[in-house]
Length: 433
Image (cartoon, rainbow, N blue to C red; front, side, top):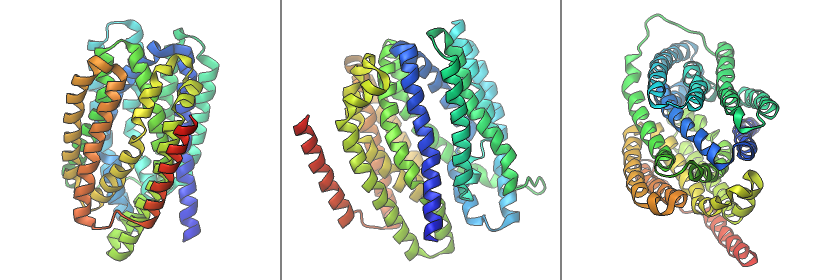
C-alpha cells in the first residue's frame, strides 16, 4: 500500500511538475521574444480566455473527484456518474464557446489581438473533453504524467521551431492552445479504459446544485486571482502587466510544485471518508497538512531570497522591475497551501461548498478594493500586495470554517521545527545577501 501510494505521488509530481516546467521554460523563452509589452498583451487575452474556460468547466473538476472517487470500484455507478458529468461539461463548453467568440469579436478591433483571441479560444472548445477529473478520481496519475510529458514536449518543440520574433505571436497562441486540445483529445480516447457512456436513466439534475455552487466559488476565486492582472492591464501600460504576470507565474509555479507533491492525498481522503473510518481519515488529513507545510515553508524562503536570480535568469534583465513583486508574492506559498488543504479538499469532502463560495466572494471584494487603491500608485507591486491580502483573507476564512468541522490541531512538532528552520534560513540568507 505504501509503495503504491509512493508511486502515485511520484507520478502526480511528474505530471504537475512537468506542467510547471513547461510554463516556466515557455515564459522564459517568450519573454526574450516578445519582451514585457508583448507578454503583457498575450496575458491580457489569456486572462479573458481563462474566465470562459472556467465557465465551461462549471466547477466539475473539483466536484467530480468527490462523487467519482468513492464509487471507483462500482462500475455501473461510475459509468452513470461519469456520463452525467461529461454531458454537463459538453453542454457548458458549447455555450461558453459561443459566448466567447461573440464577445471577443466585439471587444477587439485590432486584427492581431483578434487573431490571438481566436487562437486561444480553441481551449474553450476543447474543454468539452476535459476528463482529467476522471483519471484523478481513479488515481491513474501515470497516464496523466505520460500524457503531460508527450504533449508539453511537442509544444516546446514547435515553440522553439516556429516562434522567433514578435511577429510570430499568432503561432505562439495557436501552439499554446494546442496543448489543451491534444490533451483533451487523448482524454476522450483513453477514458474507455475505466468508463463507458450510459445514456439511459441519467439524473443530471442531482448534480446541478453542488456544481453551480462550486462553479460560483471557482469563478469568484478565479476572478480575484485574475482581477489584479485584468485591472493592471486596463489601468497601466502593458509592460507593467508583463512584469507582474511573470512574477506571479514564478510564484505560482512554486505553489503548483507543492500542489503536485500533495494532490495525490485528495482521492484517498475522499475514499477513506466515504468508508466512515473517521480516525484514519483524521490521521491522513493531519499527515496531508504537515506534509504540505513542510514543503511550503522552505519553498517560500527560497523564492524570496532567490527572487533576483529567478527573475533575471528566467526572464532577462528587462524584467528586473518584477524582483520586488516576486518577493512580495512569496508568502503566497504558505497562504495558498493552507487554502487548498482546508478549503478545496477538506471542506468539499464535508459538503461545505458554500463556505468556499463565501470565501471567494470575500477575496474578490478585498482584491477589487485594494487594486483600485494601490495600482494607480504602485502599479505591479500594488497588484501584488492586493493579491497577498485577499488570498490571506480567503485562507483565514477557509481554515476557521474547516477546523469547526474536522477538528484537528494545527500545531505539531514537525510544523514548529520546520518553521524555526525556515526562519533561521531566511535570516542567514538576508545576512549573506
